[in-house]
Image (cartoon, rainbow, N blue to C red):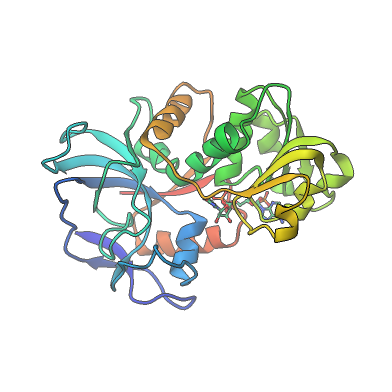
Length: 311
Ligand SMILES: NC(=O)c1ccc[n+]([C@@H]2O[C@H](COP(=O)([O-])OP(=O)(O)OC[C@H]3O[C@@H](n4cnc5c(N)ncnc54)[C@H](OP(=O)(O)O)[C@@H]3O)[C@@H](O)[C@H]2O)c1
């Protein structure tokens, strides 16, 4: 199969188009003909060698990176009952996927714990944009923060892959939503229904917000978030490790490590299909140049929504 691979980890390493053996599904897995995959900050960290166990445990070179994908099932293991050949599916590969079994390729084999059928109205590109970022946002708003109607919520980094979904899910739950963004993303967040957009280049959130009920930090600014939070409020971060002082204060602080499920993927896919949550997706063709370019842009941390590679 064709795959976009690297021969080593690190800044200098470049992705290239390679021909490698396709992965073989075991009895508990399906084989998917990949139609689209998305690039996450986690992919960039992986390429730089910054991810620890379990992520690199089963890697070998040439290495196929990537976790998010969508495609068509072309083979099912003998223990699989809920999927059949021809199903359109999307999801996230195992954290510790093998070196030839990432999503930057024509095929991947995966168990079905983080897989769901693509709603009819969704394209492969839309579906591939959802798993890691969408589930992270969905879990943060609906479970970790458990946002309630009329609550005041701050989302730091509202225009990114995670933030752009989080602001909309929080609005759907009836919250008053404030979000930070750079000047290029102010209009976008207003169009998504954010009540108060804070240009973090000019204004610190604490200068305009106080007694916030819940903060979702997608940028690693825990102190900035805590400064806006009411004394018994809750802050969930996905982008920095809280210090023991932050963990032991009166405000509730927690790091969310996302554990997506098929059920959550189906719910979120339904919200997109029904038009209740909108996506910002830019597609690029399947080539090493696209992946090198997308990795650089995601690494620069100012992407709008998601970058997706289509096959
Ligand atoms: N713990 C988990 O399970 C988990 C899961 C998924 C992601 N993550 C992490 O969460 C973070 C966000 O992921 P993502 O996919 O949303 O990233 P992304 O798509 O690259 O978005 C990053 C966003 O951050 C904003 N930003 C950059 N610097 C900022 C600053 N100083 N203040 C406020 N906003 C700033 C950018 O907004 P502007 O362009 O408007 O400046 C951009 O929209 C990453 O660090 C990722 O590794 C963790």
